Structures are given as structure tokens and as C-alpha cells.
Length: 305
View 1 (cartoon, rainbow, N blue to C red):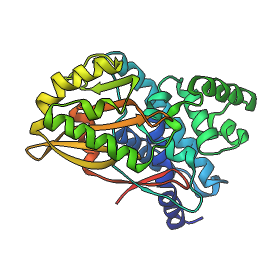
View 2 (spheres, helix red, strand yellow; view 1 turned 30 degrees about the horizontal axis):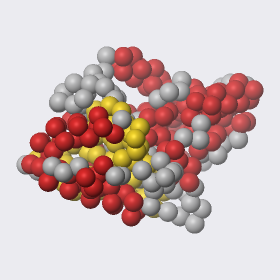
View 3 (tube, rainbow, N blue to C red; view 1 turned 30 degrees about the vertical axis):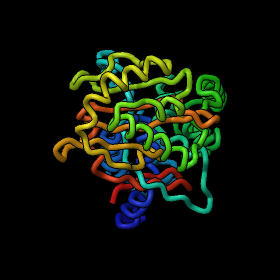
């Protein structure tokens, strides 16, 4: 394998590695760093020493992500208020082998679920259940026995469960919710929006201590209606709202004087009611929203043109 072929192989694998790294880390910036570090390591290895390029790259990238997760875990202890994964403006490309698991695994709700897992549980679960690797491959990637990997995946399954984040709402249902939200913001009336919220709905607002946001996850329709009415309906009318696909779901990007100040998306239960609303206002997490990530559902790959 000459260096040109070696470079081509990495570039072919890059979207898949970014898709894996973003799901593991919940941060596009960290995912890009992990993939770049993998590339530098790839450059330093003799081509003759690589028997299986895809396996080598998956292993190197996964283990770099695990290192990043360790330091990220320490930073999260000091995080102010609820933490949300960094939102991505996406363009979903459905292929002939469309995978529901890969599509659902990019949503904000699913990435938040992964936060309940240990780093190795998260890695083993994603590799096995989402990307479809065999236990033998997961074992080689994580340098653990197959039995240990099976235990990790089993524990992760019990934690994640068959959560409602796997439910895929119709585009029409997502559109109805966003229209009702915009109506509430512009008129101050919650009547239409209220009928779309589940009784046990949660509201996650991430300001990171840098801008005003709720300092805890709010729950219950009545509590969230009050928050939306007394907080958002007083500040958001001054924003320009633009529809966008956010992590595979329809959402809203809020602009003030041309600058992105917030992004909103929602998750639904299988009865079509909104059960989670996510609002990210932390400026550090909004920087990548001007980019658009192409999501290949067939393999989970992410790329920005």
C-alpha cells in the first residue's frame, strides 16, 4: 500500500469516523479533534503493518474518543445547569439500506441517553447495536474479551432500553409542533401548543453558565407552560426564527441581529405528543450551526462540504 492509497483510504473512512466520534462525544469540535488525531497516528504507521485499515482506524478513533471522554467527564462536574450535546444542523441522506438505528442514534434525545453510560459501555453499545460490529470486532477495538464486551452491551441495553427516542415522528407532526411554538411566541397564547405537550414533558435548557437559562431540567406540562409563557414569550418575539433540521429532527434556529442565539428541537413519544424540548443557548455550542452536516443513514457517516 503506497502513501497515496493510504491517504485515500483515510478520506473514505473519515465520514464514518466522524459519525462514530460525534455520537461518542456529543461534540462536533471534539469529534473533529479525535478524527484529526487518528489521522496523525495513521500517518505515522507503516502501511505494511496495517492488515485491516477500517478496523485499525475504528480502534484508533474509538480509543482517542475514550481518552477525551475521561477529561470531559471531569469538566462536566463543574458545568452550570443542564448539559446538552452540541447541536448539529443536518441534511439526512437516506440510502437504499436505510438504518433506523443509525438515524435515531443521531438525535439529541439519544445522545443524552448515552450520557447515562460509562465510556466503555457507550463505545461497546454504539459499535455493536448501532454500527453493527460483531462482538469479535468490538473485543478487538476495546482490547477486552468478548465476554466482557457482551456484559458491557447488556448493561447498556438495560440502561438505554427501548426508549421512546427511537420513535420517529412524521414530518407533519414535527411541523405542527414548531408552528404552534412560533404561534405561542408571537401571540403569547399557549392554547395550540398546550395540546401537543405530554403531561410528563421535560424541558432541557443549556446556557452553560454563559447566558440565562433554567438551571435544572423542568418537568410537567403546567411548569413548562409557565416557563414558556413568562420567559420565552417575552424574549423570543425579538428573534428571527428559521426552520432547520437539527440532529435529524425538525427544529428552529433563533437569530438576533444576524447572530445565532439559540436552537430548539423536540422529541416525541409514540402517541405523537412532545415529551422533551431541548433549547441550547450556550454560545460555544452554537458555532457549528452555520455548517450543515450530511448524514448518510446507510453507514452513519457525517461530513461537511
